[in-house]
Image (cartoon, rainbow, N blue to C red; front, top):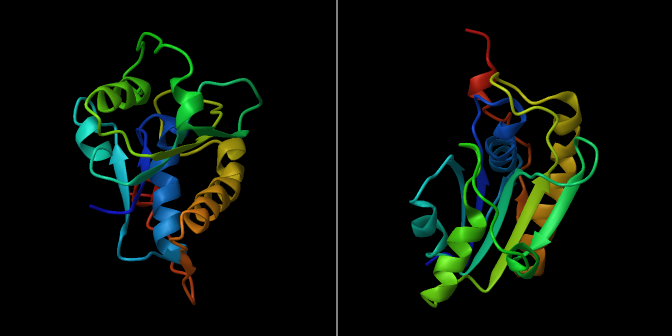
Length: 174
């Protein structure tokens, strides 16, 4: 069981909703992680989200979030804040059902003790590839929040020397 799982959620074909995937690619290019830290792009999971979440001691999730604030605003949520209110109805396919999944895991006694969501307010989640400028500018702050949390959890990420170029394959010209 990994001590920490860092994963990105989102759909790379829906504009800013691809933030999670983008951040994971940049993290992998710029940092090395301890062997008990898993870093993965979870894409747009459905019911299998619970199987991803249940096998970790701590979770760090990066995704776009519906919240007050200008596009590109970084929002940090801990498990208690996420579960404070009942789940809202899932309206669109890019709603991962995180709150529902955490509640199910809690009922099963399998909730990770630490959950952090690094969210960014999107500008556009319409069909299209690539992040808007406002969300792209929030990527360094999102990465800093993830790296800081890993440090707090005693699993520091080490900067690559030299850093690699992130493989943002979905933004390449054909």
